[in-house]
Length: 139
Image 1 (cartoon, rainbow, N blue to C red):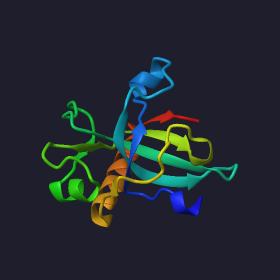
Image 2: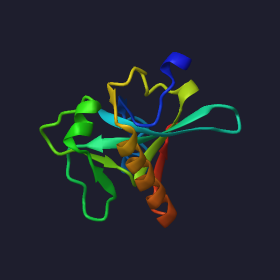
Image 3: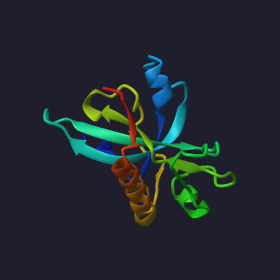
Image 4: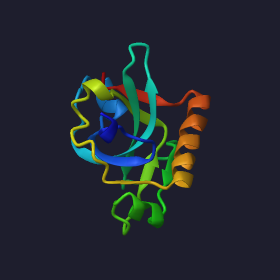
């Protein structure tokens, strides 16, 4: 598992489940989208819980918390750099690595640089402090 262990800042294609889909009872993301690995923690059972942030080309609605992806970072992550992209930081998926059926290909398409990864993590922490962080559990 060491070879395919995800790290913060890596970008994967992932069937992201939006919180509104989760609340409607859906269990599967409707399409694969690029997503950023945000945080990996170990739970009480010793499993690795992945917190995954979606990346979108749709301008976030007012009231959402998102970070624009600079062109340089889009290149690093092997994303389309000719269109505006954002990492959504007020909503995450929580998925257990050892049981994940949604993280099919564990080879990242690319990775954000350390400074931008820190910006994303600080954004998530800031939203968490406000109590507005939504998590769709994929476990």
